[in-house]
Image (tube, rainbow, N blue to C red; front, side, top):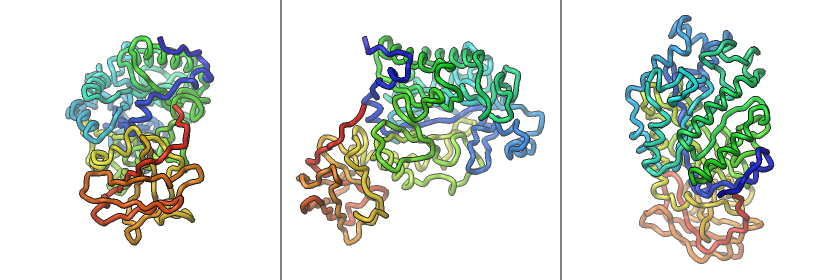
Length: 458
């Protein structure tokens, strides 16, 4: 029997982050739902918030909606239009596996109040309307068949639209003029939690990924739900699980197993485990208004990913499929670039931990004139850099609490027929890098016999 937890943040904070989550590094987030049918927002905004915008008189989305769909089309009509006719969960799972992702987080229910599973608690769901498929269940099976972990995220305690209820945006407790002023009352909290518990029972998620609470954990019964989840996972499923920091208003950035900056990386190492979530473009949901310039390129995605990992983070990179179930090439291609690079350099990513420093930046007074990042595993320090070193050499200085004087050898990671020489001079190491050793996206050199002075938190 596993460790018992009390429904308090202090007790929940004692829960260890599972090794698999530390080791995984890359996850895939998926935002897909009726909002994918209109699939539009002003560039720089979230297209999955379409229902909120279409009922807001001052919104550009309202103007777009009336122009392209007319005043008589309600959001629930998009649920009927959403056919997902080209969706193949096995193709998705194969793609996610091929790019090196280790876990998949699908929006089980986004803020639009539309569950993507066959729920007993609402007639408005993807199994009974639109696709008429248990999207959560089908993707769960396809993903786990390939050895990946799976979780349906749950965003319902800040729903901006709730079919089946009266009130602003169809939500019983949103009588304010903005969603920021609204707080779900006890009737809605019970409705929200009974659906979430059903989702947990049916699919045994490897993570609980909450989003955007508006009230405290006691009123949401969030601590109780988390403790029940921990105990169910340990005693019934025999699996190690994790919970993010968005279960309640006071938990964001403070409580749970990992914190979740959104579209925002960190300047320094965070010893507390974290996960950056973002889309390849500016939106999580599919946005037909975005073009190539609004998306990360492959090399930008590789650099972003390495930066996250060097600072004790994972990257949960999002895809926003079109309504028919296809993933646009503008999203797919950069992720494929990352996957190809990971296929050659995964040794320096998976299972690693942060070192005494994440690395150096190009504008640092001391160090190389380009960004350098570090990861560490089994007495090996991995060095990442992105450009050809000036003069073919790169000098690395030992940080205050890290020692490079013990380096006993070096090798190139990535399978190319080239070598890198490491010369130790006091507290510094100079790498001699031939042009043939350079990778198109990020070159990785392994330095042997380097200790890690950090006490890695679980």
